[in-house]
Image (cartoon, rainbow, N blue to C red):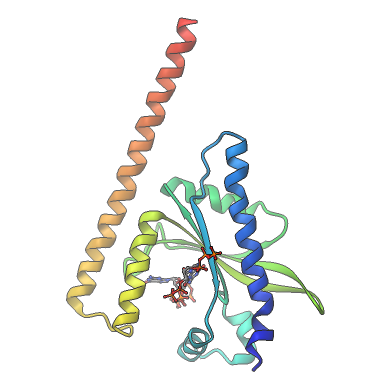
Length: 207
Ligand code: 0O2
Ligand code: 0O2
């Protein structure tokens, strides 16, 4: 398999989607609105991870393009849980891609404690042999969810997927703490917002 050739359109898609999603930050700033996007990262799945996952899920290598949805992966980090819905709406409304699947691990978290909103999109890339539509997975999550997922991911790597029970239960408690942090932050934002409205109303009344 010529991995460089096979993965080239995926790399192109990741690069383009990163630019496009990062672009919202400036657009929100110009409109004097708070950006629902804090930062964006992305990667093409490394070949050893592709081979691992293909083996684990029984995906034949000639069906990777349709069966493995996260060869191209983009991650959008938000400050607040509420922003996730806004980002998903921005993605749904784009005319340069098609949403083919959504997985909501926010209202229904995974057994591990993982929370995130996954949107699988079909994205057209212009290649040397014409247009190629590829699948990409966009993961939308808060900073707290990302913090947890990053640590859990590296522990999984360290323990080769076999995390000891006591570490697992600590991770579940940490996931719970991250969830509460998100809730607290949302409440603080709400209170700041209400205070601002009072302040603006007071100024209008005094004019
Ligand atoms: P590991 O252990 O394999 O995860 P740039 O500023 O554009 O140069 P960017 O996009 O800000 O770079 O960050 P980068 O280096 O592409 O990604 C940083 C890390 O986040 C990588 O870790 C990726 O694995 C991970 N990552 C980013 N986006 C995604 C995504 O959409 N899906 C998945 N699964 N992972 C993502 P490493 O260094 O490869 O290490
Ligand atoms: P990477 O590149 O190492 O992150 P499955 O692989 O069966 O769990 P599926 O059906 O392929 O999942 O799609 P899903 O669940 O929507 O997305 C899988 C990706 O979500 C993973 O990629 C992770 O990036 C992230 N993810 C899912 N569950 C967890 C979890 O429990 N902890 C963490 N840290 N991340 C999770 P990969 O394939 O693991 O690759």
